[in-house]
Length: 529
View 1 (cartoon, rainbow, N blue to C red):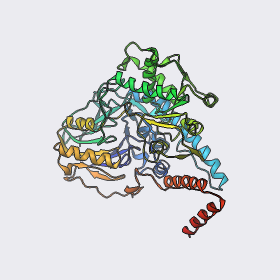
View 2: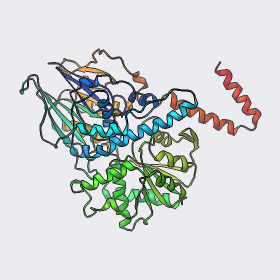
View 3: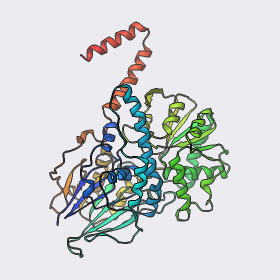
View 4: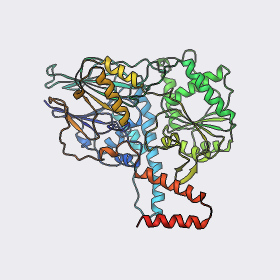
């Protein structure tokens, strides 16, 4: 019986995780995530899937982050009727995350359509709606950790703690040809692997002696210094103290799930210890507020909280649910901390705050997570002097700071150690969910550790492989590539146009007089003809 895998996302890029497996007459997905980053990459969210949703039998979901789960409502909207298997923690988080994601799609399309109507362009429709997100929850089936679960006559799965976020799992698959344990193939999808000693969660775990492993590579080739909880809080204290001494606002773009709750926990402890004054901490994200309630409900299963069981309801925390409450934050000139989604600054209320506060030199923006190429957060990290937010050019005068000690991903050495613990990997290792440099660095490290070079593969987006064949070479498929490999995971012409427009404006403003400005524009016009 043939077994084929097609990499429909997270191949050459860190988002859009989706793996399509064809096992005899059965078809299923591992993850069905949303693409983030450049407009070219995000356009895939609006296009047809490379497969027919009505022919997919079931979905196995590693965790709740939208780049792994965010297209499940669209999958259902287009004809998928099977179950979605995930842990209880993942299902509980998505109770809020999927409807919220649908709401964001509706709001963004409403804004885009106002601009499109001004240019006589036709309207767009949302990828899916708030109602679609709610409806999708009916398809979820909760699966416990470390117990085999039969998902089909010829397939069973086992979920392992991945140490990434609440409910996150690596998924082990055992597939056979006739419903009994003959001709078995064992696969392991890493999902996103968390670092050792991560706040809230035990260290990642998993089986060994597999045929194939499909492993994330977000931080391939990059290493961090291990720090204790006390050292982490001490570093956060220094960043917050320095920001507040500027007498401005501290903005923290944060992923609504896990990163926000980690920040809240450490801020509460620092305030309780008297290290920080009880300054107002605004959690300005309806989704993060609801996710925090899920964390509170799972508090007995979270590590490192100790005697701080009520930590998420600290009196310094102000949860701003409504739009009016969010807008009221702009009345402050300093002395506050604002935590708002999204973590890459590409959506959500953080964009409103950045638009208002970025041009103030007293403002501090503290980046606490990975920023994909082409995102607003990445542009800020790379030192952009000006950015475009909701059609407006904003000068960046704020202090931009970055820390990596809240990363939810294992670093390069930890990824390598996790892979080696899975040895022997008998047939092949696929490296996914990473940028090109990280993928290449992790591949080299794995080969140096003893895995044969022809068994370590970096697939391109939409590549397919026959896992029953003797070699690991892409096979021909009926569906063409949606994007050229070189365009995946890199800034696109939209990014370059925005950067060029901002640079042109700076040059025009710096010109000595209007005559010089006219000359520059004339020369530019000539170059276009």
